[in-house]
Length: 116
Length: 115
Image (tube, rainbow over all chains, first blue to last red; front, side, top):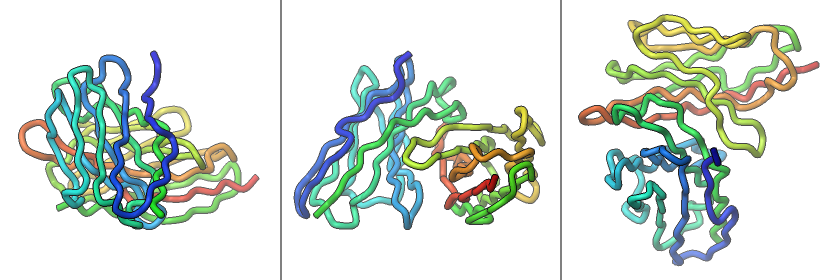
């Protein structure tokens, strides 16, 4: 099976712009979670989608949003970019048997976003 | 609450020694406790997990122990090897409504195994 893929791998934007990141989960996986990784804050949970519905959300401002499509692919969007949004954005997919998140999460390679 | 504390933040051991990393959480309803390993420039990967109905789980040189009463769980690596050098994260499941939840990652422990 192919692993989790993320596009693009690298992105450079300027303050005030918006960006859309894409995540394709492992075939058959229904849950997709997004994380922001920075040296100072570590790995922080953004949100989780299951069957096209956002089930959980982290403590990020409304500029961060996401969605999931019927084929389980997910996108996240960040509007009005700030310098502090520079980070590695990781998505992870899991089977979510029984709807719970107690199955292994498989991470993608991440998208490295730089905001200038 | 969403408090997850992981200690130590850095750990340096000699090859062949054991390493122990501890994670403390605050959500008494947590029932799933994974550990992830992230090598430099790579994605996090699950190395071992435990559910709340057991107290210990082993997989070759890696083990995880859980103390639900004290709300902490620990990663034990025996006979460490240089390839064990990486950042390790605990990520207890914080429960949400229904049967959902989110993984809250600890701050990470940088393990260096010196040959």
